[in-house]
Length: 123
Image (cartoon, rainbow, N blue to C red; front, side):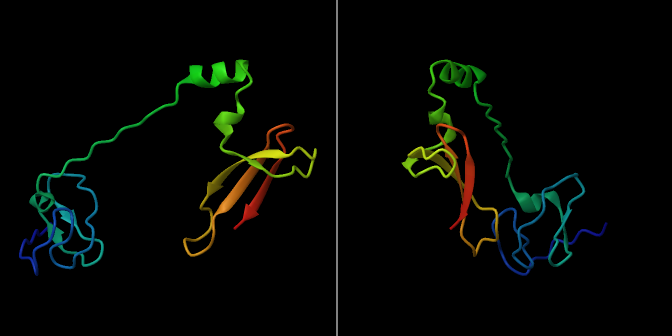
């Protein structure tokens, strides 16, 4: 691999000094190739960057104790006044997700607090 370090302009660490694109993660000590302009760079292009990953797991005891005391609704999301189409209950919890493209609205998932009937709404 031919590594060239002659940059077109000065950029922040982690960005290609030739075209300004974000560089892919460094997988080996030989360097990295920009996906946009195909230039090769030595690991020094990342400066002193480091990656830190944190994975947080929910405590199982929280769910178990809430289920025992009947407070499971709190774990399903906020509660709103909305009539369930299945049992006519007046309270439903909801959660939102962005399932479609970014220029379209989000999808709202409603769950009845009484019968657990689920419905969706594209906003």
